[in-house]
Length: 85
Image (cartoon, rainbow, N blue to C red; front, side):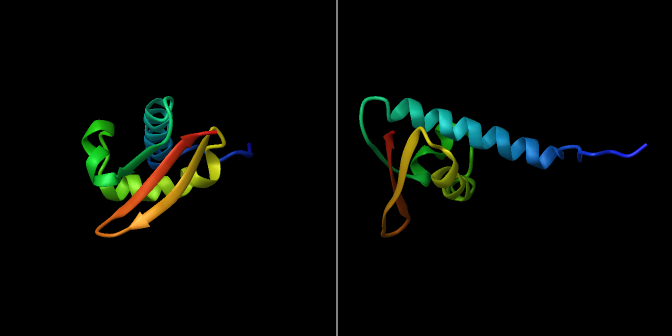
């Protein structure tokens, strides 16, 4: 018996869950217009570390068609600009 698909790993499921949670949070916050934020300031609200948010933002920039995501500036930490597409 051969398997044609590989089972998802727990890590893959966790990453997808974190990505969906962050995407939903950003979509909700950007409903009324654009949103500017630094990862460290929303980390507690989404239950992720600033480092996790930064890594997920790079993925979401390419995959979240319902959001316009732009790396806005970098001073002491990256500021992201989000707007509903």
